[in-house]
Image (tube, rainbow, N blue to C red; front, side):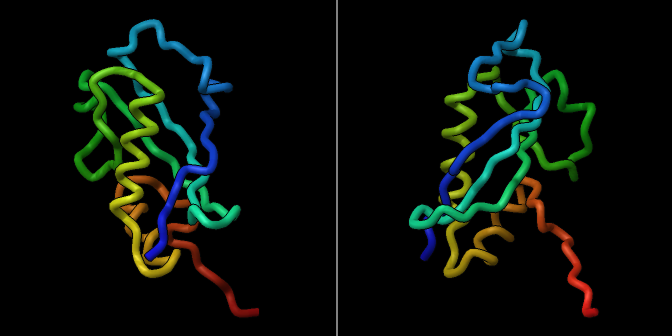
Length: 116
């Protein structure tokens, strides 16, 4: 069984994300991009995670993928994502990525190859 891990992360809206502090940590709507791969390799696929506080919950439909957080804490978000992706471990990377994609947007979701 594979062991997925976060290789790196960033946010286009708040770069570098490590030094961003929202004006109000209880009022957050942010997308963070994670490079996730097998722990025994350097390769990674990109997944976007959407993190919102309670006051944004009505803005998004129940079909929208997001993590509801009480307040912004990058350390806590990394813990949440790490625990989640560990629970998605399967026998190969494709099956693992499909599981991760249930809560995080995978760069290859609905990817179509073309025969030329």
